[in-house]
Image (cartoon, rainbow, N blue to C red; front, side, top):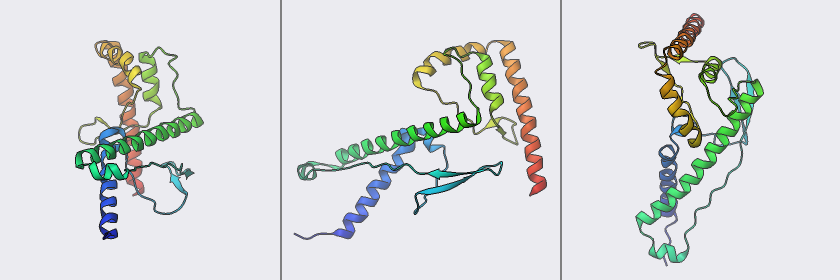
Amino acid sequence: MPDFPLVKAQLERNLLLWALQQIPQIAPLLGEIRTFHQHEGKSGKLARVDESTDEIKYAPHQFGFTLTRDEMRRTDLPVLFAKLKELAERMAEAQETLMFARIGEAVEAVGNTVDAGGDFQPKHLFEMIEKMQMDFDPETGEPTGHILTMHPDTLKKVAPKIKEWEKDPAVTAEYERILAKKREEWRVREDRRKLVD
């Protein structure tokens, strides 16, 4: 029987690429994060805006994708892509789990956490915003690049509260006060950056 190793290798690369392209649809938060490929090495270096550095230790992950001989004979493209989507879902779940674990470690290390004790109130939201470094759109003055992420169970409890808080003039006034302060901090950072450039 003839074998076509180059064709199989190209097909394998294209199918894997397709699976990787599904990850941002499966886990939209991952799609918002810039990535790059490091082709060699087991670690990397993280350089922060404040010029501090840290080592990035990569956690090994393996994801299997197999087709039995019988599946190879019977599988059509929709079934193949469904199996590839399952692979992409496992990869996305592993990436999200690792990302949230690393974020948790980082914020704990610098004390940048807010504990609502199971009862999220406006003061907790304000404390969270106070701890954030915020960027703003220079044209509109609106905050940019911020995503509030919650577990679905938490979101069910918190979303109705936030809708109520939006109707409270005292809450919205405090939010606007903090936002104005953050906007001014951003302007100072931008002016400092322009002077250095």
